[in-house]
Length: 209
Figure 1 (cartoon, rainbow, N blue to C red):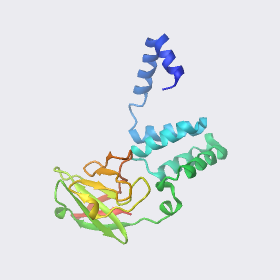
Figure 2: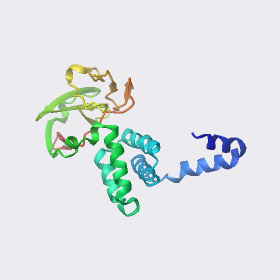
Figure 3: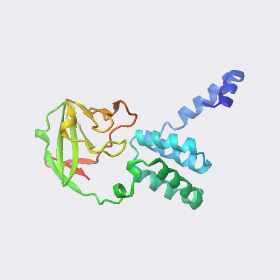
């Protein structure tokens, strides 16, 4: 929080508490991903570099994909204009985030059959390779499945089954550790595993990669 906001909290605590309460409740009808995308767009509109970086990472942590970020900026073209969008792209290139690398954005995705649902053991993490891409599947005790990309969200390092112990996944490059029951990074890093779109049809698990 800035010095100015801290100052206002000291001299006008009731007014500022009402303001923060308003901000917190104002997005009650929106999901977290939508709020995160809107926050990113506002930082681009104001061209605040530090804020853009902060809210961009927050959006990624909320599960917003790189494609969704870029599409949101382009859809906001009428208010942002080309200059501000290019400003944001320059910062994205500077940040060197793996999700935004051209080769990861332009690869054509397709649905791939993975495994029969009944063969995915509850409360266990499974690894599958499909056309050179790895996917981790976790099924909880209520039979809900989560699918994760095999690339570490840090620098896109490939993680294989050898790095899996129980429901803990460790990146071999910088030892980021992840809890596959929810995808959260639990050690050394600060970003979750990238989820993969999946569906279940006719008793089979399919993933979109």
